[in-house]
Length: 483
Ligand SMILES: Nc1ncnc2c1ncn2[C@@H]1O[C@H](COP(=O)(O)OP(=O)(O)O)[C@@H](O)[C@H]1O
Ligand SMILES: [Mg+2]
Image 1 (cartoon, protein in one colour):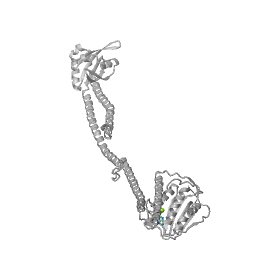
Image 2: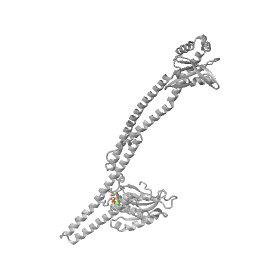
Image 3: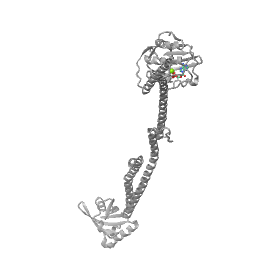
Image 4: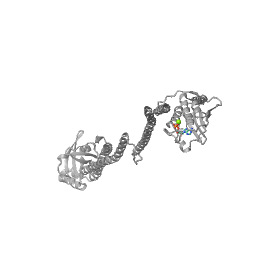
């Protein structure tokens, strides 16, 4: 995987971006404001001092330099500059029409030339009021205040460099940069750290998914987290257990099915060998033939059952649903099994239904279920016991009951009789153990179920189906209900 596309890089980049944006905002908002405030404070301070100093301006010396001596103003400027720790320049203003002409009369720094046309002083002279501004000379910024002296044509300029303000701002900028760089570093580290924690868990899930995809379903998917990844892991685990269950069922089914197929094939093979050998008399040969016939029938039944089950599993069962007369189904079954019942001495009684009982179902499938139940009642009960078929209604559903007087099914076995390939032990068991499994699934596909009640001497299998004359006959249609 491209390392720049990893969750870690993305998270680190996102955090770094957030920090950078925060820093940028602080830079844009805070730095200029700070600079402005510091400068304003400096100018205010300058203005207060300037006003105080200007009050003591020696007007006489200024207006009569010949009487006071030419050095007087220069000295005053120098003394006061020292006092307020700022440069003091004194101008004489000559008015020529609109624009005043300024001439330096005294300068505490003796330079004079650089402040000759100072705009702050010029403005103070033009408008006759105290003016403050920031001026830049030779790349240095100054906080300046110019005060016009009342009743005379002098303007005094106070100028002090803003270097300490600039230094303060520079320091703040430097600290901001350092703090920002630190925060960026921490953000990137945190991003990678947090992401690597998640990435490790995600990779573990990825490995688990690969394992499951590769058919190794034994190792559970574990992740202790309670967050989304934890929930994902739980979903994975549910998927794994379900797949493991299905896989187990599939293997068991295949094993059972092949076993069921092999047994009759073996016996057929054995009989064929015996028949092929010379020393078998005609009567034994005929006996063998009839047994082989039985085995072939058993194989046929098994093939049909397996095909039905696979169709049921694939959900490809197409149902032809119509009103089915349950009493007629009972009679048809009794007729169909009359010969078998006679040979095994099971008298079959069909109880008359009181009124018509119509199910909304697929008739062929209903008969198929009835056959499985009746076949069991004959096959798994001793000779001579009676069987009773009846159609009726229970809880608004149409019911076909098959009742026998056999030994019954013990409760611990009753739980399993509907499972695929489950056969009770005992001499009578000769089927494949699929009859009841198919019956239950077919009934479920038609929105019904097969219920079992059994005690010694009385076993009732009841096929319950949606009734044709119920107010909402197909409310459960097509949905499999657990039976
Ligand atoms: N009427 C019944 N009386 C007693 N046992 C029964 C009856 N019906 C089913 N069983 C038991 O349930 C098992 C499963 O039945 P089924 O699925 O039809 O398989 P099979 O008939 O092929 O053995 C039977 O082997 C038998 O032990
Ligand atoms: Mg059976």
